[in-house]
Image 1 (spheres, rainbow, N blue to C red):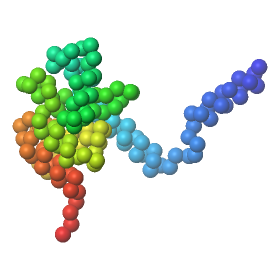
Image 2: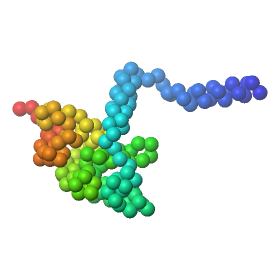
Image 3: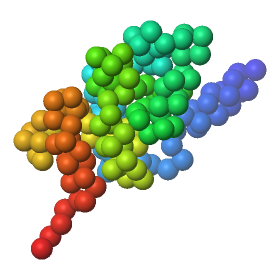
Length: 161
């Protein structure tokens, strides 16, 4: 009996180990990615479809239908975490009943095929030199034109003359 338990333990351990040693650069990148995702999730800027339905006084029988439609239409984006979509609170206009800000569709169109989900979340949450060290998410309601220009600059990348 002891040998079969030991064999089982060894099988479990082998499943938990990587198939090959992890290179230091890959380990460092993994740690950085985990830190970035943790910061995004801890920011308090993310709502579930149910949260949005409650805030916006939408039907709660199928709370994902409205946010799914907004996402399909390119009016908002989501990050996927543990099998659920979470939507950025900063992309919603409180004055309009927590509907997506019109500029979001324009910004998302600029990033189409370039960034999605987590990549968008990182961009909106990061300080941006094009925005004088401000984060795009902080200027969406006050300076949407500047955020749109910053998105275009991001997609254009570094241009050398």
